[in-house]
Image (cartoon, rainbow over all chains, first blue to last red; front, side, top):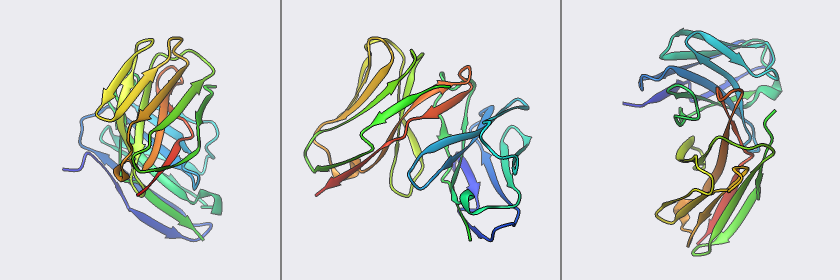
Length: 114
Length: 111
């Protein structure tokens, strides 16, 4: 009965490939997020998605595209992978505005681009 | 954009010593949250502070929100090896639709 689950846990791929990471939450939350954590542990918001409204962090390259088939799922598709994309990607969810509700994180996907 | 500084970046303590991490914002905050990430794990919510000067305790952990609501601290009394991990403060940003995380403090507890 995992609350926020993401797959795969590990992803090793070569530069130039396209890959996807899937995320599902069973908490009934209406907002989902993608965060990127680099090797220095910095956690950076990439996207948030609420009721079909997508909020994009302006620093995220357009090679990254979130896709939400319904409010329980938010997938991340990455085109033309680069070495600098290597990181841990966390999916998270919350109910409503973040100042009222904490984030629940998935276990993360460690992406290694070679 | 929202500016948040968290210090120190790293802290090594002997088991039984106290530990404090600080979070400072350039602007007044509506609230602040704290998270803990164990090595190899994911961030886990610890607490949310909302009121000016608020102090909350969870066993050996004490959380404070500054009077001006621009800074916050997390203090751990008598650290244990189970306290190892990275502690993050997190602030609402973008009209409260996103959470911006501080840079984190990586705590190592030496047995």
